[in-house]
Length: 208
Image (cartoon, rainbow, N blue to C red; front, side):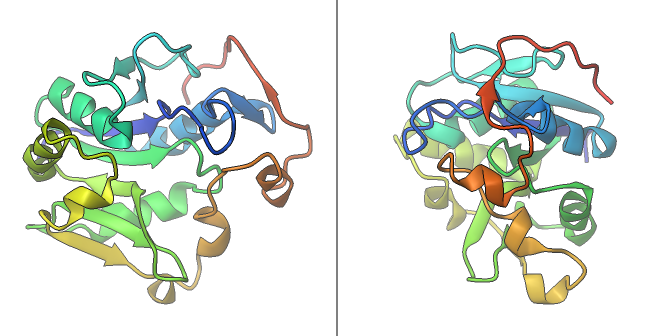
């Protein structure tokens, strides 16, 4: 196993939200910063996956730009796999601000030899492959899906050995809150935003 790298997926266009989400600020930090901070203690390094030419929402961390346009998160995963040697990827999309060390550590603890992907399912049984450990063995299937024009991450799951973590097996974690992603401004009060929602152009916080 190679070095583990944390990946913040922040390249989405936020069509349902109405604008990109990575540089939205919740409780003093951009969503991309929050995700990077959650990954940092568990990884050798952290990178931010973005679309070519977009504003970098967490510029204290290196960015990896998509190699193919308009392929969504799969393009981000493909680009990071291609630029990180033999590393496995601990992935957290920026629009899951409730995910913390507990949920991420559980993914790592559950991984077994032969797994390509370890992901969370929510209490309704939905897969969350953007809060997941993507092993290096998943890279060929991701690359093939991008070449074939797939847009949805679920398109690649059938080609992988997937280990699913269920909330019932982790009663100490609040998976309802953790796996609630941000799709609309009204989602922020439910996540405890006490400072209001705004954008930030530049940030000066150091990785920690």
